[in-house]
Length: 199
Image (cartoon, rainbow, N blue to C red; front, top):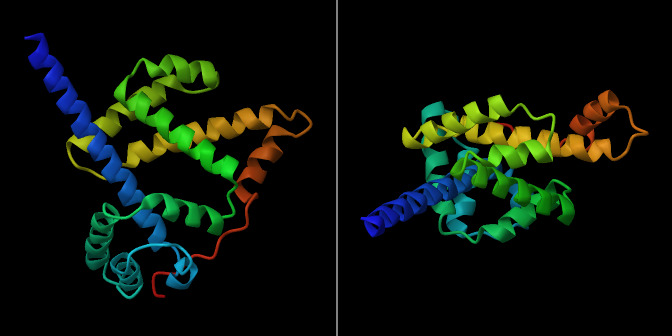
């Protein structure tokens, strides 16, 4: 019986991990659509994906755009995503340190979704964290996956972790006012040139 249960648990984890990976690829594809094709020329990707991204900017109907975004997400499954992530990071002016920090937060989010007891570690890392809110978001994120809904809570968990991470970095520099620093964090990087829907 134990072996059967272990097999079932392994299957569930494997299936859940696959869903998380697909959500991450869908998010990455969505990020790519926010840039004009000319901005993506130096990012290595397949011709099919490049054409699908260009087509996205020619589509105006909401329903058609949603279908195209799903298609882009499907194409992302066969792409080598690390060069794409690195290319986007270069466009957005992110340093290697920033990229590593983002990856670490993504892993922390995944561990939290797999194990609710990770709340204790999160509380130790970020004492000001609203653990009750994070617990609720975790439940919502799991429900979203089960019901195949957009990963709103999943993204919000990452945003909260990132905000607390940035808050921790600011705390190491006491000569800055926290309110000023918060405002600065929203404008620290110039707004990258993004494409308008009608481009």
